Length: 155
Image (cartoon, rainbow, N blue to C red; front, side, top):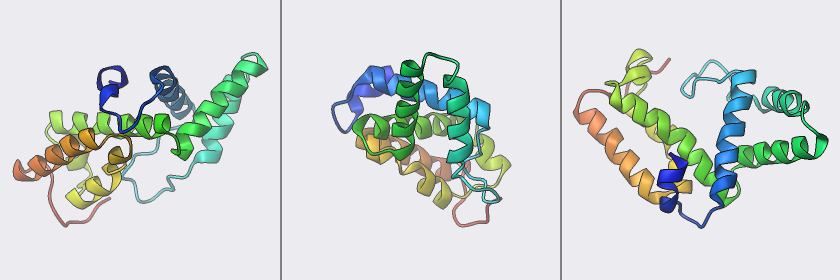
């Protein structure tokens, strides 16, 4: 997705670095456990568990390589560079497409309201205004199609 959509980044990016970020981010989440974005019963700041996982996984590599990968992981987490903003946009955009394509998926399963989807997905705009405009349109259409509801409780 990053390769195909990179031309829509808000800023010039190093695409290889974005791809590394996305792969590293997912590897660490596999090990540390991915927290459901809309879960309100747990903290979404599991950075310490993820950092431990990153150090353990990448610690198997030569230290220079491990250090580079951990720095890239940290860059993704802070979201302060053009590459991390775009990578984070991809990380939020892909599940939105899944929920839209499977008639609401986890949105419906957990009664996620429109407002919460907007809140959690608006980070896409930081990496790509073009993709955010598209995403916002998909979210709005999901309400019209009955996939998302406005103004009800979440999990």
